[in-house]
Structure formats: structure tokens, C-alpha cells
Image (cartoon, rainbow, N blue to C red; front, side):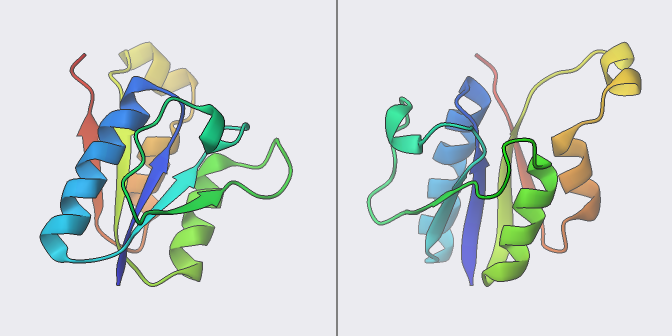
Length: 118
């Protein structure tokens, strides 16, 4: 079993990464870091935990990020998914889809959502 954290180059992504590292240490499980950004994780300002396995987003650039995460959950022995979330207005929720919301609803494993309080 492993922990998967889906990150973007954002404050929410960094908060999710910190929480996922804590979960992996607490549960004694390996950590996979799925980069949802369209540039390599090495180019971003992320403090990657030692021993974490990086998974770069594969496929076309316009590939649905939520589906990319769900595919990785299916391909690896994942016990928990960690995601960063941000506050959205009611209008934003109604008009735009939410990757986080879709993952919370469709992911077959427990999801830990981390709110950035910055």
C-alpha cells in the first residue's frame, strides 16, 4: 500500500505534499508524488521528501487531470490520495468543474483534502 499526492505548482500543492509526507511517515508507507503541472517537477519550487517516487503526468497536454490521478490510483497499490484544495465561490462551483470535487466523489480510496490557509 502507498500514499499518492497529486500536486500542482501552487501553495495548495505544497500544502498537500507536506500533509502527504506526514501520512506516509505515520502509516509507514511509500509516497508517490504525481505532478499535475505541465512542466517537470524538478523545475518547480517543491520540497520533495527523500525517497518519494515522482510520477510525471503522461499523455496529451489537454488530458483531464482528474482522470490522470484516477488512472494512477488504479495502476499503483494506493491506500490514500492526498490533494490540495482552495476556496471557491458558489458561482465558481456552479460554472466550472472542479478536479478536487471529482476526485472526492470518484476516487476508490480514501481522499485527504488539505486546505491551504496562506
